[in-house]
Image (cartoon, rainbow, N blue to C red; front, side, top):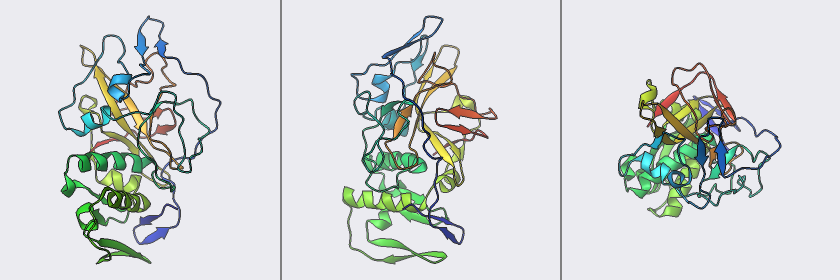
Amino acid sequence: MKKLISGFVILPFILNCNSDKSSTPHPRDRMSNNPAGNTILIDKDKSTIRQRFSPPENYEWIEEPPHSFGQFIESFPLKPYGTKILKYDGTPIITQHLHEAVLDIDTGTKNLQQCADAIIRLRAEYLYQHKRFNKIEFHFTSGDLVKWNDYKKGIRPIVSGNSVRFQQAAGFDDSYAGFRNYLDLIFSYAGTISLNKETKPVTQTSDLKTGDILITPGSPGHVVFIAGVCMNKEGKKLFLLGEGFTPAQSIHLLSNPFDKNISPWYELNVNSSETKTARYFFKPTNFRSF
């Protein structure tokens, strides 16, 4: 069960995202052709985001800086093409026609890794992989900061009534299993509200990059993350979007049902009054960056 500490009130169960919607699946093609003759190639045999999804004609992938969060995401391994989105209990969700890829990362066995948690998970995994352990820290919705460096030393947040306190409660454990336990704790008490507060606004479309997020903080709220960026010679960018969802389920890359000529790529504008994605409409548009 996912919990949320809001100010001094503990709500027993708050969904970060809207509930899954029923819909009839349709088959996916390897290529998507638009009326102008452009072909977007999806190479089903490739195993990373950047390798599998070619940009539309006259666009090229933007090179992310080495060892950056953006490079980590676009190089993230994918499960075989056509993999279904599965809930935390191993059962498939109903809506299977609005994604183009599933990231090869576990969801856990509890209903915890939902939408905000998906990008928190990727961010934490990136920092962990690059041994930037002092940067692995996330806020509960209450505002309390929980650090991996403290958790691995056995310091635990103790939620009691309307407050959170910290005490020594376990021995030292810096194993990956301990790290996953830390993340499950974060997933239990963090969400879109806390994630919105610990990220910075992006005010120019030209500044949007892989790893940035589009977020509606609230209960419910939702968040998607930019999973790839391409650009043409005129400087116009297109974007791939990924997300987690409620109930906790596979982190996946979205298709674009609103512009199938460029799907799965999206046109984005930080000044749009509303941004439509495959499974959620963001109003207002609120792009943010770590």
